[in-house]
Image (cartoon, rainbow, N blue to C red; front, side, top):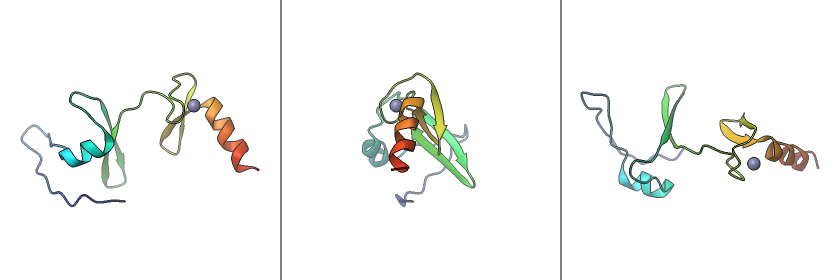
Length: 83
Ligand SMILES: [Zn+2]
């Protein structure tokens, strides 16, 4: 995992500022939604993508290794890996 080497303190309300360079590299703008999850002892902050991470479809979304993938792309993925 790539570390930005940035140390930040959490304020009284539990907030932190996500460093601008990290937001820039993921293209996260002001007031944009992020998804926060826990992975063992790491808090992950991820740009919120409501739909399939491949085609952007919001229909029939499944969780595939922590990524949102629609059933069509899951099929494509599994057929590609079995070739
Ligand atoms: Zn898809």
